[in-house]
Image (cartoon, rainbow, N blue to C red; front, side, top):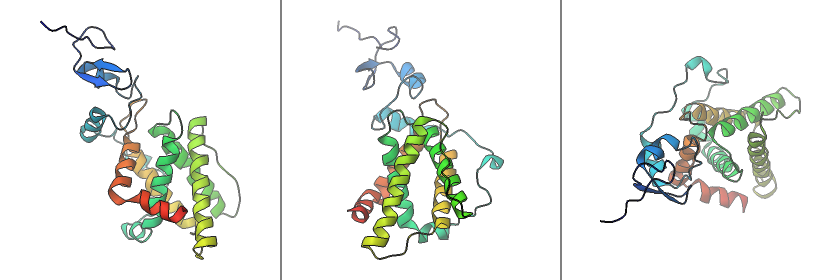
Length: 213
């Protein structure tokens, strides 16, 4: 009789699937309960992908949606697709390059970025910083990419910089998506996974590369 391999997490149940986080096999129960709770699962994990496709995002009431005074229409997003794709790619890249960054950090980085640009819209230059260091790191990296994007438009493309109000609207759109695309797990990255799929599906990486390079 072949030897039974026990789950590397609980050590009790029979292991059913490989887990790259623990470098071994685990049972389906521990995979389901510890995924993005005690385990920082890589987005490429097929079981995490399956979970993200089927689990529901934590519901959020309409009154909790931020920046409701800013209207973002479908027509606006379509006419600003290049900026949207650039922001998606840059935000995703900033998060993936920041160790420990999860959905809540990305949403916090977006919130701080929006407030910074809203302050600028009033004529003042003041940077609102995200509350924790991880979110602040994502925010800094994203802001640097956005600044480079503006420079490329002006210096290489001989175009006008994107208006601050337009940047705000795109960031508000992404923030709203982030608010409504979280699974509530401490290490949840369902929103980041959504951004990753948006990059793959809409070709944002190739378009962003042409702009920057």
